Length: 240
Image 1: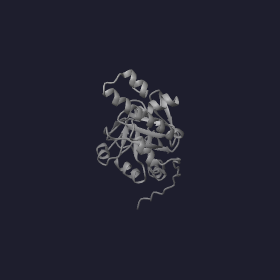
Image 2 (image 1 turned 90 degrees about the vertical axis):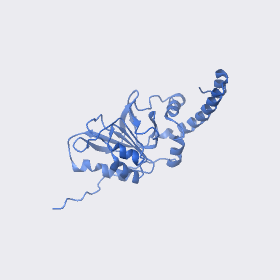
Image 3 (image 1 turned 180 degrees about the horizontal axis):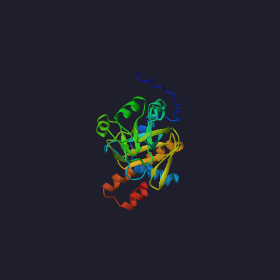
Image 4 (image 1 turned 135 degrees about the horizontal axis):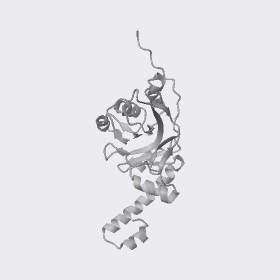
């Protein structure tokens, strides 16, 4: 008997933003996470907007920058077909430039993201992944050049261990000050130092302030390198 065909019955939930996703990502990638974090904390009074230590890219040159496509997983031995195939259905909600952000609920018994999933998601617009858990197929992810951040790695299949249970809803990830809420469309920016989360409504404002600070830091750095008086340099650029 032929196997029953899988039908797409999953709800579409799209990210909606009021900026040019490609242009904003390009501008963020010229900066670095420490600068974005400082900008949020110092200029906007938003401290603690970073994922905690341990979430790093598979290679140091990888960066992610884009609106969050949030996914939540649950540790379960269940093999329910609807829930298992949700990973296929959620792909159809992805929009160009989005970043998969997956809350695995502390699961450590398998790899929750791999190369075939990345291949499928990239073809539907996903520009990178941040997994608050594990990858598998890591060498293949590196080879295909798909920016991927994770906490650890595992060769173990997720079926019968961990399943996606919902997507494009508010989630929690592990932050530097405890659990950090991330809403769909919040801006995800990561480099080799870690990952910061910018509230959706401040995506462009934080970027614009950070770009000005970046130029000030550039001037300060060059002046310091020339051996100028550090007090004079600080008073001129306001950065050190």
